[in-house]
Image 1: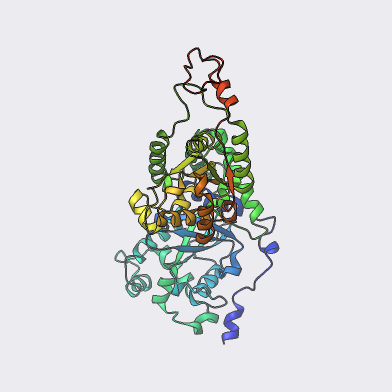
Image 2 (image 1 turned 90 degrees about the horizontal axis):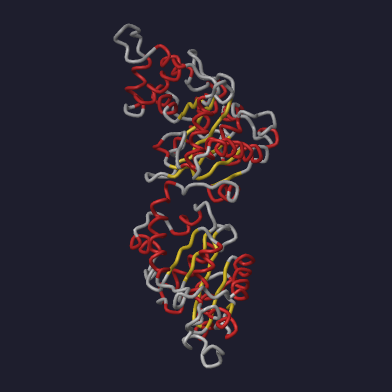
Amino acid sequence: MQAKSQRIVKQKAPVQLTGGAGFRYENPVAARFLLDMLAGTNALGAEFGRVTRVDWQARDSGWLADDLAVSCRHSSGDRTAGISIKSPQQVTRAGFPENFVAAAWAQWLGVGTERALRNSNGIVVLVTGSLTHEVEEAWSNFLFEALKTAPDRMAARLTSSDAGDGSQSSIVQRALFESFRCPDALRSAGETDDSATVQVMSRVCLLHFDYEATPSRALGQALADCQAVLKSSDASQAEKLWRRLTDIADQNRPAGGSIDLPKLLNELRGEFDLRDHPDYQRDWEILQRSSRDLMLDVRTQIGGLPELPRAAARATIQTSLEQKRACFLVGESGCGKSALAKDIGQARYTRVVWIAEGTLDYATAAQFESGAGISYPLVEILTALPEPCLIVFDGIERYSEQALRLACRIMQQVLADGGPQHVHVLATAQFEAADRLIRRFVEFGAPPALHRATPVSRPSELEVQGLIAPSRDCNGLLCGPSCARC
């Protein structure tokens, strides 16, 4: 009997077949979840939290409804949904299609898959392009009641022979229930009575996206959400963003690809000017405010004169940042290391996080996050930024042992191969501390890009003279006795 029950679950197929080029309705459905990822919304419902990852052709992950798998993060716990996408009408007054019912029961019982829904909080989803209002309302009402009522009581309502005005369920609800009874081939695999049927149905989500209709409400909502995630809120850019998201879905579907928020942002960075992700916006504002306050103490001008050009030093530092994503800048006290870091950060990066000696003086990352008043890990916040960012560890020779250890942990996460490619690291220190710090970097696991120092010297006399030459009153303050004007 076990062998027979296995046959009801279709065998794995190559992703080239399951993600065939003709399945165009899947693209805007997947794009909807990519947009949810950007916007902090979720078509599955607020109780699922935010979308963190989308996988195409997810049979190898144990999903029998395998067109998409959508992973979500919520404060109450992570949840995942296996999604079957069908453009034609699937659910009618007569109930659900047999193949979806069989897949849902097999998923619940763990037949043909190690991912059994009865042992997890995941769900199976049926997305359809056509659904009558009557069926949609009946299903919505069923779920509302089923999630608040004991399964045996809900089953009693749905199987009651009382069809009069006293019935606690509609004709359509009872038809939906009857269509969801366990297939005969799976009955030996576990509890399959009426109460179990209610439990299985409670793990089913029915979504209606009318992308093929004219006009399309789902498309109108998607374009409005695209406008909301763009800084400009420009309608033409919103249309362009939606087309780009459907193109990304089209590229990933045949290959059975996967995409998370960092990867999606990398795809879109430089092409669209996106707002900060709503989940991280408050945390970023806290970090930005702290960084601005610290950077105000770093002087880049003297006596109201223009800034020193330092062209050679800037080029060296920027080359290291572009090639290695990191630079360990060392020099004598007063040579302008911090000023260079500030200038480069403001000139070449849209975002700058400035970390001083007391910023990371905590034993653990969790203590730092609590002390800073942020809700998410620092690297996660930086990863979600839509624009290039420079994180500066200024005067790192003055960090305490625990602050240096935590700084190295952050460097390691940022500069990892799978880390945020748009985030670069610049550390500054006095020259005499370089060897000691490099040994500490190695000991604490900082990446190799920080195992070698980039020295910077004081501005040359020629650079200083060139700066003050236009001034009528240098008074020997900067250039010294060699200045022909003094």
